[in-house]
Image (cartoon, rainbow, N blue to C red; front, side, top):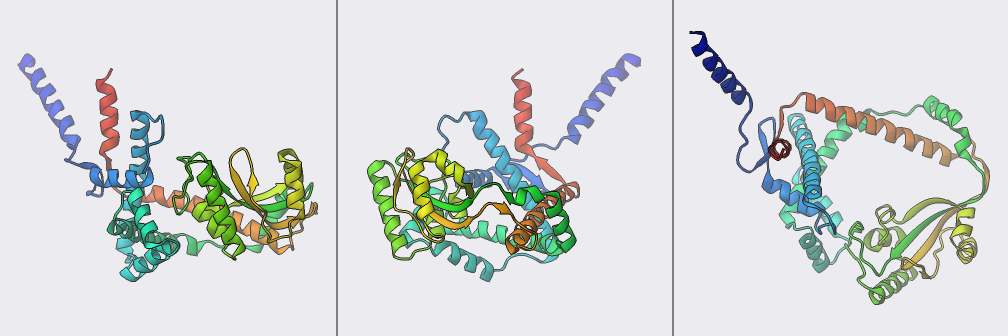
Length: 342
């Protein structure tokens, strides 16, 4: 009897263990509260975020990128389900208004090329906008609308960081538009505009200079056309640059920037990277900035707001995950594959 019992017990245990592990459904990368995120959806989202393969990337790196994208889709689905329960879904008028706003800087042909580069249709883009607008409404209601920054918090922050508001030397708040002859895969401006060689780069920067002289907005041109990965998305904003840093970069550059009045922009500058146009936003003399300075107040409030917003969002995501049933089948497949290769 004992010898018969052992095989039966082992079989029963194996059956129970296999029963605890849900089989992976076909074409499903993950499930959130039994709602599927398909591999088709994952691939489409991945292609829109990585339209061009990064040179030299391996299969493992691509898989890691897809796992990261899937994590974002899972978080998005968690928040969408929460928004649905609260009746905060974006309506058609919201989507149409945002769609028209995003499309406005482009010609019809340019917009179609942009969608094609991201491997998206108009319906895909509108669907993406609907999800993002819905999540924005949820975050605003559940988090942002509850954040307050008191005068006492501003004062305490200033007193704790007083030294950081003391400028040791004059500084210049600057912005830039950069065009390079070598296209960089990491650069993503709104027009997906990248010069392919020096001749194209020079033609492009001269066209931008002409637009600036005709009164076009510097920040919008930077967002649309600049090829600097760190500043294009911010309208070319470089922040405050100490005058000594300008000396180190180029003495002639300092002379040029010093000669510019706030609001003015430079002529086209030829550099090792390509071409650039600089704009002086403001100039700050050396010395202590006091708490009653409106710019100091605004800076502190923005810093504190961002800190609280980021903290509450992180906590909100964790609570949403704790209250949800999430199955990441792609992650399971990766782990299982690693085990088989041993």
